[in-house]
Image (tube, rainbow over all chains, first blue to last red; front, side, top):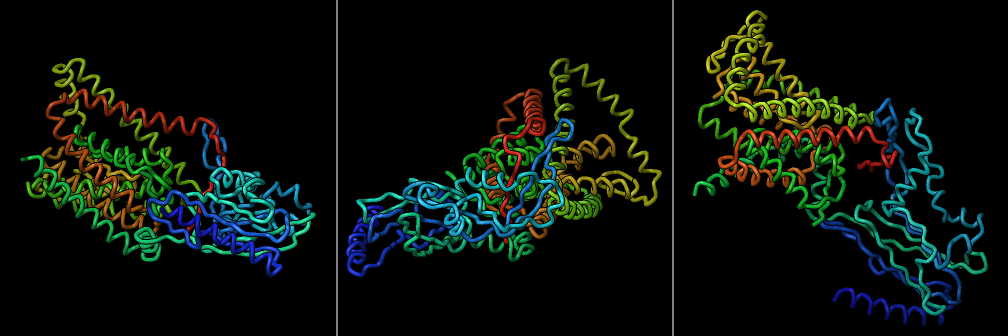
Length: 252
Length: 311
């Protein structure tokens, strides 16, 4: 039921939006299918729908960025016969998730200078990002970082992800992966005509952990000693009870 | 069914983890060894970060050894004086190990150290189990009496050394008079192993107590269980406190799985021949060792690894 209702709401909204665009002369109107993505223990990813209307035919680019993350990067190297971790460093301020979706490949729509200005090239994602205490030789970690991100579906450049319906309406579906960085996600939607961005809009949605998962990770980090001791005692009692109950069951 | 582990920060299949707990529990029920030294490598194989695997392994042992310790306490099979001296050692070693783990983790070398420790230790345990079970299966009566005699002749060197070292102490329940230093050092080394490998250390403690210290077999198992329950309890609490590395969901699923596995194992062991079971366990241990060794000998597909730092 829910997807159908969502679709009907979306359709109604789009029809309204296309009128509104025509009436007010706004270049670009957009709407998100959801404003919250809630992560539970059974969360395996979610599709987020974005749709909108444009006043005149053109190309649409949607850029999605998550809150920044600090990551540890380690690398393996050969020592004699062994492949071992050769070192590790910390990189603060990397985009956790970065999607650039468009009606056509961005390179066909915008010139290099414009692309760089709006940050639409994934290889620019690490611009200005500097690793902390990088004493060890880590080789070309930037390319490796982006390759790993693409593999996990955290970085994506898709020149066909935004579908045009007629020449006034568009929609795009983002398949978010399971392990999402938490916080507020920022969407920038650009309308491009003749190699120029003629209109832009921003949208937001939140990704948050709910229920037990949130409570567990907050407690484990915020009150780590209390958590550790309480959990250990709980494990002890659980083991004791299980042992006694199961043994009784066996005696019958 | 996939579930998200809040501390390991990854998705795992619930059934896989239940199965791991069950299989390890089954083996320990069948053969009578704790399965800590299999759980940690299995978790590492499915991609759990090594420090989380080691810390959660320790928490898992707390759950699985509680019932056994209680049973032995009721039967009066625990030498508490010996147990406390061992604990003083293993708490010291365990605490030092937790901070050592933190240091190694910050330098990015914890995974390497864990792999090497496991390859060496499982290699030794697996090989000796393999030899012993093959020997027993081939010629039971002859090999057993011969082995028994040799043990009696050369086994007591540690207790002999214990009689000469300073700090002599009586352990009436174990019918021993040895230097405090022996159980203290034994405790320290087992404690370090608990922090760095996520094992209880029973597979070291039990042979040392039986063959080297010559403690009566009746109190060996109880005392060693008592010791390892409280060692893993302190180490697990510290791993959570210092390293944020105990994943509660993972630990609980493992405890549940192994509780059931142990019960089946204990019942099955009555029907199945012991020597062949030991051979099976030896082969499992050798397989895990070889898989770990191959893992560091073959060029990895992905040279880089990335982990999100939380908080």
